[in-house]
Length: 214
Ligand SMILES: [Zn+2]
Image (cartoon, helix red, strand yellow):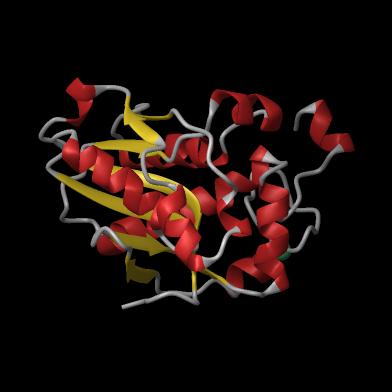
């Protein structure tokens, strides 16, 4: 046990209880994990799978808040995301993982890009590279403050390709934390496909239950 964990024992990202070193969540929360994953079609026509549904449930609201301030919470989520990747995408021959990018300034303010942290862990579990394939080049309004119609247009043109050679003819997995309208991921898919990707798949920690699920 390292000295830090004596003073700051690891906490369950879902309920906040202290958990033993090496565990990623408490056994009670683990027992409530859904067995199945969730799959939906996002506006670009691509699939987005997730281990959890993000609804008004306090548990996930808390998780979202905590996750953005605590890298540790990503371990449990990445493990569950990997589980659904094995369930839904096992035959898709995915070759490279990337995250929904953030502006450099945003990243500096927050300290890290939470989707990037998840993407790196997932890529390690899948034993394939995690690359920065997209960059966010334009500042747009915060998606969750907009209505449904505004969200669609707000993301158009904000992402550019950052590594064309890694994209061409590749089967790519894009990682996001929470997929609400799906417009952000859809725009990432469009840019990657336009850049020559063979196929693009998405995974999020949670899908919103308010939008079309299949
Ligand atoms: Zn717990």
